[in-house]
Image 1 (tube, rainbow, N blue to C red):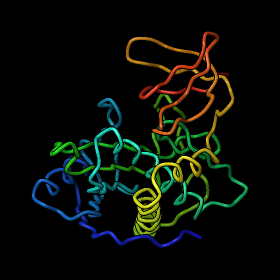
Image 2 (cartoon, helix red, strand yellow; image 1 turned 120 degrees about the vertical axis):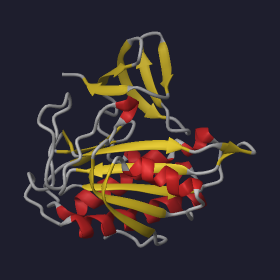
Image 3 (cartoon, one colour; image 1 turned 135 degrees about the vertical axis):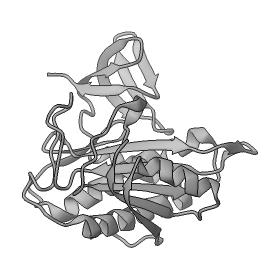
Image 4 (tube, rainbow, N blue to C red; image 1 turned 30 degrees about the vertical axis):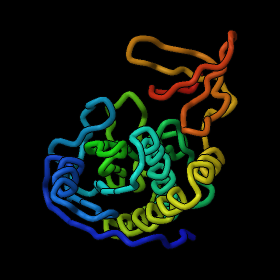
Length: 247
């Protein structure tokens, strides 16, 4: 059962370019902390590093506006609360026998297949703190891409059909819970919950960086959320990159 967290004010839209863009516009206009923007479809959805994100009707597209009053580096930890919230949503509607895991930095996998995308963007910095954070989340409810580098799935493909509204409400309930945990207890509580379901921990992985590819063992997650990669000459701290499990 997902513990109730603070409620979100929902702005429901039809067809948009991207919910993150709509959320940025609302945030600049003064939208309150914990405002969520949803859309039936996105015509210009995007993922990490500007990758296109297919967004047909039937899936859940949601961007949450958060105002945590913290430096940008610390705000990056919010991608972990998004992953935990998506994990909770998926688990709510799937049998316990279906394996659900999180993968650094912010993937959620169902039976090893990608079921969501998470994109964190920050607003301007004022007085050392970000004015707001946008947590964009796309969850494959009815559809999933068949031509992506990472094999994907959807809740429908796994035999579940919660509907967009039920999925939205479940996600926001979970997001409110983990956001409240992060604000009151800090990152250690989030790190502990995330590590319990982390795939690849203690195993060989490949980390693709913009200019190189590293190999090693996923040794741990540090206190700021960086991946610690164990290599023959010691541990390397990774703050951004794409992780692939060794085959």
